Length: 273
Ligand code: KIV
Image 1 (cartoon, rainbow, N blue to C red):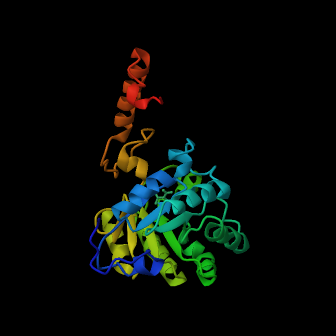
Image 2 (image 1 turned 90 degrees about the horizontal axis):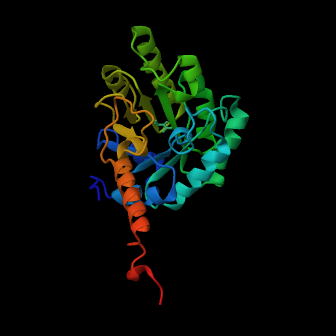
Image 3 (image 1 turned 60 degrees about the horizontal axis):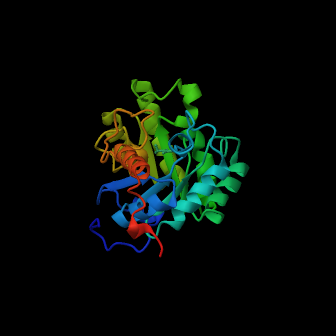
């Protein structure tokens, strides 16, 4: 169990996460199902993102573009059922908010009403500020996401580090400030140089949660399959594997095949009288 400097809240809120800036680093993770959510929650991780990365890690797509609101609601509801204390953030998928504010409000509302999520996340910077303000104004906490925004890969030309030129860096700092003004409770910084992430972190009063953005963000987030070693289609440079569960699964399946074939499973202890 993680020891938090403040009395541990019964259930994390978006405001509680915001208040961690400058107090303690935030360890966040993605999660997509009930069984894993129970372990994540029991470990004391305060923020779970049900990311649209599930399109790749769970559904086997090459990118996140095919993910639907129904996919997200289905998985977010499962994570909520497995969670008692972590804040659960549902990721708004491609084309669930880009067409306009009215559709955004309907879809954001579905995450809270149908899935029981605590907050939503949208990708984009200053261009999303009005939309974010409308969602926050309707009582739904919003997490921002700037830098590499995977829903724009067709425009960005692939999964590429962002903010390397002075102009791009300036735009990203202004994007983060615009999101803060619009009322987000935290901002994901994805795949940007560490120095720029530090500059953005120092420029806003809400926590920055980095993924491929260096050590000076207010928190870090990893995709659960990357952390556990269960997604081998692609491993970005910024990933640290804390376990090799994919290898462990292969070993267990091999042992099971062996046991079935040689008749040692099921044994007497697995049989009814
Ligand atoms: O979908 C996702 O998993 C994300 C994280 C990479 C932040 O957006």
